[in-house]
Image (cartoon, rainbow, N blue to C red):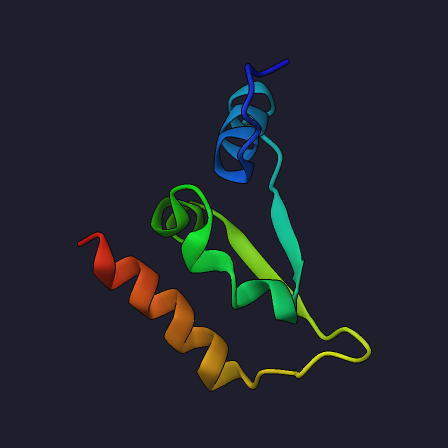
Length: 79
C-alpha cells in the first residue's frame, strides 16, 4: 500500500521494485494521452514505462506520429 495521493508513475515504480523479473505495460485510451503532460511526473513515466495507446469508440484516434510527438515533447521538457 502506497501513501496517497496515488500516482501512476509511483505505482509502476513500486510494482517494478516488488516484481523485478516482470515487465509492465501501461495501456491508455488514446484520448488519455492528450492529458499525459498534466500527469504527475509525465516525463519519468514516458521514460520508464512502455505505453500502449488504444483507440476508443467515440474519441478521436491519433496517428503514431502525433502520439510520438507528445512523448518526445515530454522527454525533451525534462532533459
